Image 1 (cartoon, rainbow, N blue to C red):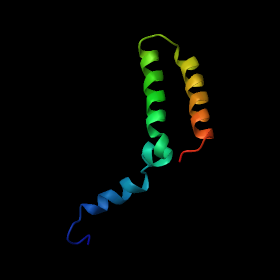
Image 2 (cartoon, one colour; image 1 turned 30 degrees about the vertical axis):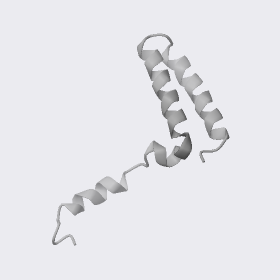
Image 3 (tube, rainbow, N blue to C red; image 1 turned 135 degrees about the vertical axis):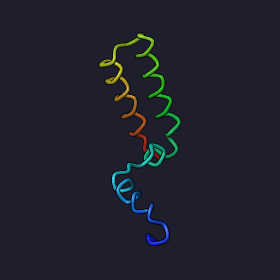
Length: 71
């Protein structure tokens, strides 16, 4: 196959370092996780909350979502 498409050799290194998409990990909870990350980021950018506090709050929120399972 590499003889016909030598560019595929480049992908082996890329794929070896690949990480799963968040939707793969969070499954049906992806929308909740995405919304939590978006809202937290937005609040920090608007300076409605500080970064350190926002990260702690986000972590707690994500742990609550995950506690109920990703499925």
